[in-house]
Length: 329
Image (cartoon, rainbow, N blue to C red):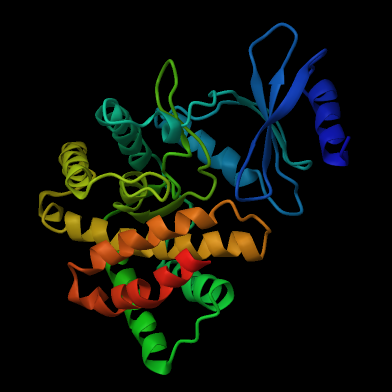
């Protein structure tokens, strides 16, 4: 038995008082965190999180859990914690991920429930959270040339292309920073939302929450790197959210005319980041399971670029040089 798993079992027994339990891997993610489903002898299942302290810090997860619970969001309740060892014992929200549940018949209901939860998140307390500032926005977009273009595709860009990326990234950051600021989950998509029997959806993987642009989580949800919907339907869901956000005081009336543009450009920023992360997961972390999601992610950028002259250079670069290389690889 691996050492970390043995340590976790010992903590569940001594620190949590569990006896005679069964334990099996539940899931992993793109970080070093691992999750185990635990079946104690006389109660329902629980989830044990293993976050090795040398690589992960449980404190942000605990902090954001408290904030989201206070806002009425269904997040995994923390039953026990050992921050020094990097162990948490959590409520089990099940395994019915949105990704496997979304279909034509049920999408309106599921996205409606996800927007309900998002509005609660955005009204949560963001005090003291990291700021989604210009530096962070630009560093995220830099993952696209650094990992996807340079490492994964070995593309050589000339000086004009490098300058185009620099000015485009600055312009996208300007748009993000012009938006109202709220608590941002930062990974609000179909692999982090679960269909639950009560208070659906369950929300997970929010430990990187920040104070940031109001459109960020919505574009993560509706222009998901793992699920794609027709543009017209996405626009309907986007506009329905905006109306609800206006009622909740999250958006002001004058924000409504800007919101579609904010949404589009925020999506480009996020998809540049995501494409770079997927390549980094392959080449730095040895996880190639995300490579198949890169084309969909880049296709979003090409589609949006067609509507904005400022994105013409980026759209052309991706359509003519990046997507063909990704598909060939």
